[in-house]
Length: 135
Image 1: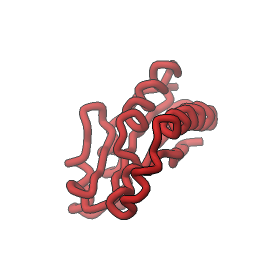
Image 2 (image 1 turned 90 degrees about the horizontal axis):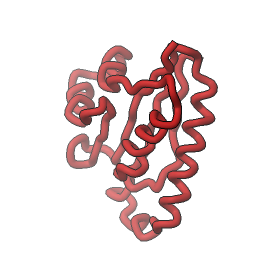
Image 3 (image 1 turned 60 degrees about the horizontal axis):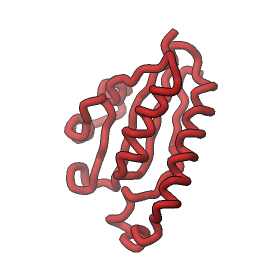
Image 4 (image 1 turned 45 degrees about the vertical axis):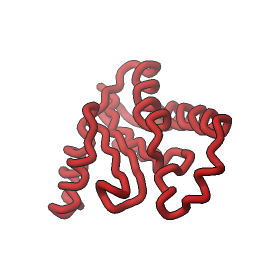
């Protein structure tokens, strides 16, 4: 496929603003379980991406362990993949308003991924990264 979207199972820490009671449900074991699931989902989803295609990884989590660490772990164990500029891909979609693009740009990290927070974007917490299978 040209593009596979992974809405990964996660702890949901990005929804705490709306549902503060859920923070008491995140235990170390549940985080470990989610991390294992995320790694598995990423690996399986990657098999469906054709050479030159993209894999979009997203969570509603604030935790680096579920976000950047999962992307880094995937790239380390899966040769032939690179991380790309997620803001550039979002802009190329032409689906964002100028204000929306500005919010996405403000949330971009050094690796090219994007993290949105209630404070910075007025949304739940979200993370997304774009990975490309090299040809």
